[in-house]
Image (tube, rainbow, N blue to C red; front, side, top):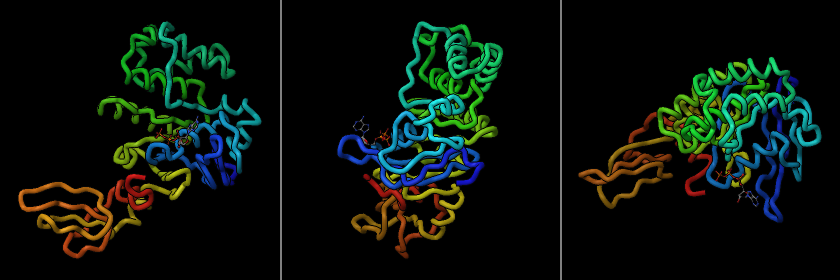
Amino acid sequence: MGLQTSLAIRDLGYRYGPRWALRGVSAALQPGITGLLGPNGAGKTTLMRLSVGLLSPDEGGVSLLGGDPYEHPHLRSRVGYLPQHFSPPSSMRVGAYLECLALLSGRSAREARSGVAEALAAVGLSDRSRSTLGSLSGGMLRRVGVAQAIAHRPQLLIVDEPAAGLDPEERARLYRSLRDAAAERPVLVSSHMVDEIEREADAVWFLRRGELVWTGPVEEALAQMAGRVREGELPRGAAPRGVVVAEKRTAGGTHWRVIGEDGRLKVCQPTLLDAYLAHVGQGT
Ligand SMILES: Nc1ncnc2c1ncn2[C@@H]1O[C@H](COP(=O)(O)OP(=O)(O)OP(=O)(O)O)[C@@H](O)[C@H]1O
């Protein structure tokens, strides 16, 4: 656990009633954007809520900016957090709402005003400061969510599925603001969109049934798959050997993409989805 690590988790375990949602999870957040990937129910939201001190671990511990965020809730004011379900009061105006939150996290009135102006500019919503929250589109609301997470100039940003339900243009815009935010502090972002994380993130954490099965740079995840992914067409009825990543019917048979050694198929360039499936598996 280096001094520079903004978030370090060690042997973390958490259970809802008798069921463990997370077990034996250890990792340290690195600078840049880290994508937290895992199927529904893998434990992503639970891990994020533990990381910001909204839940108390049943096993292990979290070090957030050098302290335990559950025991020392003031640490949360130095972190930006966008929860999965973000529903601000619809009758409030955007700017007033954001300033309120920045004040609550301990900023002076002046800092709050300037932080909000900067955050709105960062997410491309400067002209919406006086709009009511209820009048915004879903995409704009998610961007307000990112703005509320960065307006108090946090040292770390944790965002839970920030782009869920957004169209491709809005998703790209949202990731642009996360990328800008990541220039100044580490960002942990959960998502189901593996291709997006491949494009936007520097590192990945793969979570499977409450266990962190792989962590590391995106490039390393891809390099480990080199030579292991094959593609090509086989006649109808012929099954490929290996883990199927994708299949598509063609006029002559089926075009397969597999992780495996099947010599009838040609080695191809791996993607993060191949690495994700190799570590997390399909249908888990
Ligand atoms: N409040 C709760 N009470 C009981 N079980 C819960 C609760 N919240 C989550 N769980 C369970 O804990 C496990 C992890 O849930 P979590 O929401 O952290 O997963 P997730 O990876 O964020 O899922 P998704 O991608 O669907 O948002 C799941 O099995 C879920 O059913």
